[in-house]
Every structure is written in structure tokens, then in C-alpha cells.
Image (cartoon, rainbow, N blue to C red; front, side, top):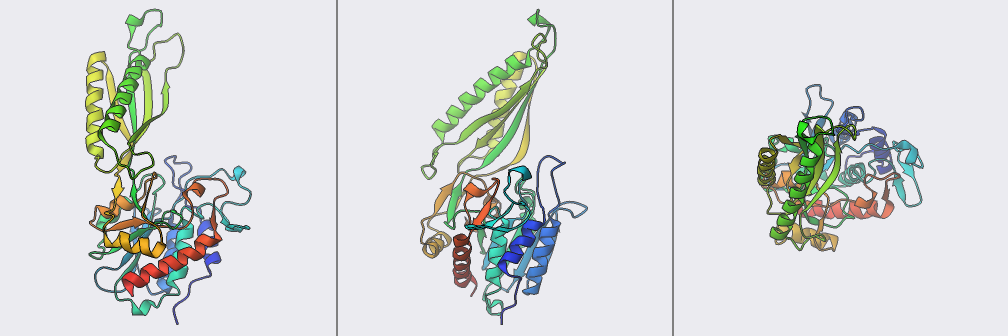
Length: 383
């Protein structure tokens, strides 16, 4: 008889019941260890060998790597254990409970992406794990929603050669072989304050930033003329000026101004090269204005992801899912596995439209369909 885990609903309720918010704001940021330890206990009961990989010295943030089976190849299922923050006042029920509704289970992380773990572990419990012919691995990471900190440590883990990787982000259980990358940057101008009645007394950081913004938008046009990928619904890279702050009074020359923007790259674009081009643009402007302009990265970049559509993994999952491989706009941890030389696809239950929303839920049909698809994938690669 296969080993057992708690019922799917019980697992989902416990995972959601362990708050694991990750945030760039320290007052909102939380540990993910309760989720990691819960998963480790259940997987240990199923016979998996457990490895905990700390991100921090005190161990409050950690990855989990659980393996069973021997040899090369096999499968790696991967997902993140953290959630975004939430405003509890906007929810119709406690966001830290798996609330049964007419359509599914509601709760923070139900789709993004604690539901994935509950569905996958309930699938593992029905698989004859003692008969595996190739290793089966589950990776649970920390801080995907804030820094991708857990994924950045994957290169320290010895994965099986030629393993196939499935990232369980919500894709409505359709295989995703393509997504854009993301950079988040801050540009900070330091001018010289003075009385506004005499502009010669200072250097107005807002005026400098106006030219910075103009040059950034020209740079965006150059990128969109140079790069294009018809696999995306928006086939060009985007650069969005997201927020700007500067000055303190209308009768004072502004001495400081900050602009924050994101850049969504497509395959073929490299973040280091893009940042280098932006830095050279800023150097020219700083020299022209005789002032200080600096660029600060708000997030270490995540590169664009593209899996070869002719690979066995893509063809197999298109068959299993009865769906062609697709492209999405959001970023995932897939590039970090691809950088290890592993064929990777994104395939998970639930809709991205539910992610980061009040009253997030995982639908019943996604649960049952997910169990069936994951069973077929395991049978294909590990049995």
C-alpha cells in the first residue's frame, strides 16, 4: 500500500494556515519555515530524503529539497512557499484558512501557490514510490515574491543529470514554455537646492530627471525596434516608468529626485547589457548637467525564459495536457533551472488572474485535473 498524507483539504488548510508572506518591507516580511517544516514532515512520511537549505543565518528562511528514487533523469517539481501580503479587510473570509466555497477553496496562496503543493503531495501518496525507475524530487523555495532569493541558491544543489523540471506556477494546467524577464531599477538624481527666484543658485533635480525620463523613453523605442518575439501577446519589450518622487516645496530648487521603473525583457536580451546601456546614458547626462545621477537595482534581474518547442519535454506535456505550449507575461523561477542546463516548463493549477487578489481561490476542477496530469507526467518520466 502507498504511504499516506493527510487529505488534500487538510494539507491545504495547514499550508494556508501558516502565514509565509515575503515582502521588501521588513514590517510585512515573514518566515516560511512552518510551511517548509510541514512539507518536510509529510514528504518524510512518504519516504523522501529531506534536505533543508537555509537562506538566512537564523534559518527563518529556507528551501526544501525532497528526493526519492535513484539514478539519473527523472523529474523535479518546484514551487515557492511564500505569498504576497494581503489586506484582510478586503477578504470575505479569513485569508489564512482554506475556506470551502461553491467553486473551490479560498485562501491566501490557494492558487499562488500552496494549492500546487497540496495537489502534488496528494498525487505522490497514490503513486507506487517503491517502484520508481528514476528519481522524483520536490523543491520548495523561499522569497520568490520579493527577491527570488531561494531560486538564486539552486546552483548549490546537486540535481540529477537530465532531470526534467516542472514549475507549478498557476497556468490553468496548460504548459508554458516562454515568459518575459524583469528588471526593477531606481534612478536617483542629486542636484543643488536654492531659492527658486534665482535658478542659477542650484541644479534642479526635477529638470535633470525630466531629461532622464525623455532619454529612457527613447531607449525604450530603440529596444522595441530592435527586439521582437511573436510568441508573446505583447511581442516587444516594455519599459514602464512606475513612480517618481522629488522636491519639497514649490519655491525651492529641487535637490533630489528618484524615478523607479521596470523593464520586461524578451529572450535574446541580457540584463547586464541593458543595465550597461542605461548606465552609459546616465553618465552622459550627469556630465552634461554637472551633477550626480546613479542607478540602483531594486531587484536582481530575472532573465527571460524560453524552452525549445521541439524538446521532448514540450512535446510530451503538450500531449499529456492536450494543449499547445504557451507564453505568459509574468516571471517565474524557470530561468534559474534552465541556467543549470535542465529542460524546464511551467505547468500548474489555477489561474494567474487569481494570484495577488483578495479572495484568491483554487477551483475544484483544477484540483482533479492537476492530480491526473501530474500522475501521467510521473508515470512518463519516473515509472
